[in-house]
Image (cartoon, rainbow, N blue to C red):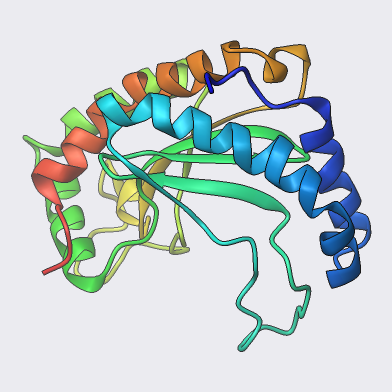
Length: 209
C-alpha cells in the first residue's frame, strides 16, 4: 500500500504505552501497533528505499539487562536507513536525524583532526549553519565539558571538538499533517537538506576501522 501518514491512533498508542508500559497493554493493543504504527512505517521506508536504501526497523522491546529501568517496551518506533538517516515516531510526533550520533575511538580521532584543520573545519561549520537555519539542532551521544586532550580550549571550533558524535535532528509535534503524505515530504526534505553533513562525515570520518 502507498504511504498515507500515521493515523491519530499511532500517537494515542504511545501515549497509552507511556502510561502503562506493560506486557498486558502491549498484547491488548498489538493490533493497533501493527496497523497504525508499524504498517505506515514500513510503507514509508519502502517508498524511501530507492533513494536512501533499505532500512532496519528497531525491535520494540527494550534491552533491560543492564538498565535500572525495567520497562519492557520502547516508547517510540524507529528505523535506520542504509544510506544515512534515522526516522522516529512517538507520542511527541515525528523526528528525523542524520549523521554519526556515536563515534568509535578511531572515528573520533579522525573527526577531531578534520574539525581542527583550517581547510576542513570551516567547511563543516558552513554546512551545519545551513541545516540549523532550517530548524535542525545538533545532537551527540555525549559532549565533553572542556576541550579534548591535545586540543586548545581556545580553538575557534572547540564547541565541535567537544562532541563525541555529531548528528543533526529535526522534529515536529503531532498535527493533522502527520496523517497525510506530507509526513513523507518532511522526512525526505530533511534528509536532502542534511546530506551535506553526512557527506562531510563520510569523507573525513567514515566507518570505524
